[in-house]
Amino acid sequence: MSTPQEFTDLRALVTGGASGIGLATARMLAARGAAVAVLDRDITGLAEHPGLLGVTADVTDDPSVVQAVRAATAALGGLDILVNNAGIGATGTVADNDDAEWHRVLDVNVLGLVRVTRACLPHLRGSAHAAIVNTCSIAATAGLPQRALYSASKGAVQSLTLAMAADHVREGIRVNCVNPGTADTPWVGRLLAAAADPDEERAALNARQPLGRLVSADEVAHAICALASPLAASTTGTAIAVDGGMHGLRVRRG
Ligand code: NAI
Image 1 (cartoon, rainbow, N blue to C red):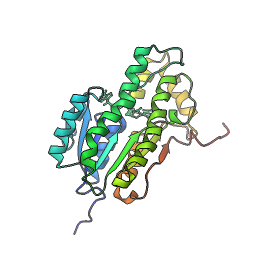
Image 2: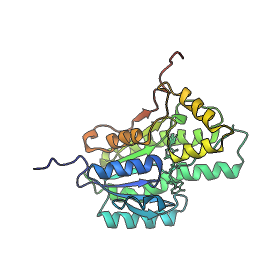
Image 3: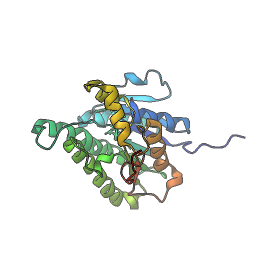
Image 4: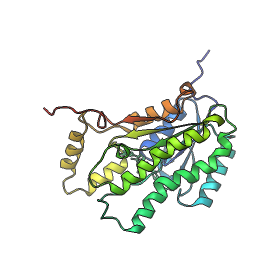
């Protein structure tokens, strides 16, 4: 007799699930028994993962989100777990980004989460194990240089996580977030590639982490799965840091 897996019979939707942290999460949920759909603006990265159902949508476009959530929930036969993970970065001080850039990043990182959640809530209300996990960031809780707009967007995600957790707790929908430190994903690969000296930049990022290395996408996915799991039925309105100790520790160098 086989042991039932943690996510057997559960259905999950992961936004931004075609790359990096989202892809690692989608794969981990599927490996642990869930039926998983990925909502992404570019699902070409899913070609090597036939077990994941891809639905194309841009989280800034409400009709495309509604359509994609409808297609995913129809194919999965409902929804138990939503991972709001799609996000983009921004660099600069508060003076460096124009209004259009502020609107663009907040539209993806904050309103994108709102649009997808709004479309998914009616389905989550039909689940006995409903959970939402938002991918936030250490930028929500620590002041990082040159990240004014990005930090504002992730601060909003953390506050929204708490507000949503309060609004939906009596409906049996848990809402939590994970706060990764700098994670070794294609996103950070692009940042490094754009640096004057990518090796030096990577070494500087590694050194900023008390652990001395970047966080892996799988490590973040583990925390997301832990919060999404029915085993965490009393955990709501929390944030788990997956940051190599960056937020809470003050270690001596050398
Ligand atoms: P990534 O760039 O590897 O993956 C992001 C995915 O989101 C991509 O598949 C992309 O197509 C999708 N996406 C972006 N904009 C979209 C839109 N408008 N509509 C639909 N899909 C969209 O990035 P990574 O590193 O995996 O980041 C995932 C999340 O983790 C983001 O929310 C990011 O803010 C957060 N995060 C990442 C950290 C890092 O160091 N990589 C650290 C802390 C948080």
